[in-house]
Image (cartoon, rainbow, N blue to C red; front, top):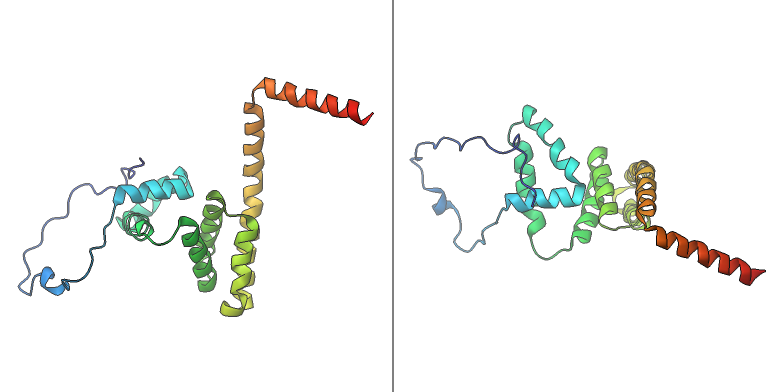
Length: 192
């Protein structure tokens, strides 16, 4: 399992503050509320699976500006919200694409979620249709802006997908290549 990069992990626990003179926090929490479990390790593992290991390592840069913020995002979002039952990962990605497109002005995050959606098996058509479907609800300009982000992200993904296909072909055992060549020879003879 993926663990938090050292730059994101807290170095030492925060010093305990003196007990407040006001009511204890337990008295402020209604007894019938279900606890919200946060699984930090699961959050980092999911982020690595969803967005790739590079996404986890790039969070360290944010720590210099806002210490602890990246860790909070990963723990609360990927180790909390994403861990809830009820929605499949694909459904969560559809919701993310819709929310970020509707919000507008968050192009880097939308591009990340377009890439994440491709990584989990959504097609370009799926992603495009999510954004097109939003036009009557969020406005044509926001849908067009979302489509521009998706188009640029698809273009960026093409060279990576081609490189992966070439690597897969090169990794194929030579026997398979001979079999393919023999099949092509048989086909040519049959066509003649």
